[in-house]
Amino acid sequence: MKKIIFFVLSLVLAWSLTAQALETNLVDTRNEILKTAQEVKTYFTSSRDPVLINSMWDSAVLSVSQLDAYFSMLGIFNTIKKENLDNAPFSYLITWLTQLKKTTELNIKSLEEIKTTTDARSKVLVLKLKDIFSNLKMRIDKELQTVGQFQEATKKQ
Image 1 (tube, helix red, strand yellow):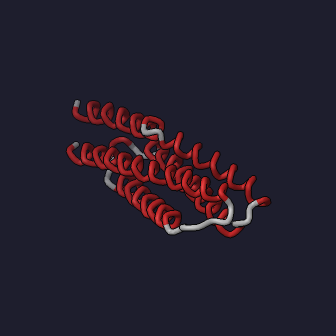
Image 2 (tube, rainbow, N blue to C red):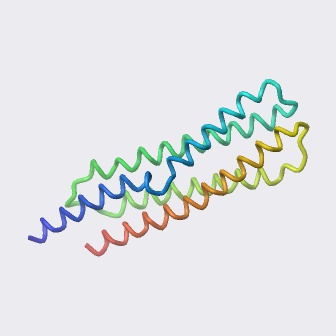
Image 3 (cartoon, rainbow, N blue to C red):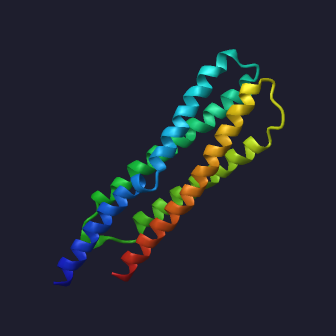
């Protein structure tokens, strides 16, 4: 009977964690970053700040790649035997999210250090990306709390 209850709870947990990325709007943030990266890329040829524009594009694409990898990692719960749900998958997700948060903080810091730009459009893009990355950092914090709660819930089982 305990195994059946544990199995059902594990299934609910795995399903809800997989759906968690959609609930926290991380997918929307990822799409917003990608859209802004495309906007930055189209501006590259006409900008008088090509190094800045290239750096912003690189930062945005890296963030999108890291988020895509995180969404793929959520699928690891589908490959784990429900009876053997241990701490390793949660620790890996937490480590990945922590690294993504550090990268996002570095991106914000880099954008804050830009005081002057040659083009006004470059300044607008800097402010837009800074706002998006700040929003991403806040959502990563929420995601870290959620994954931590799931980790604690499985320890009690």
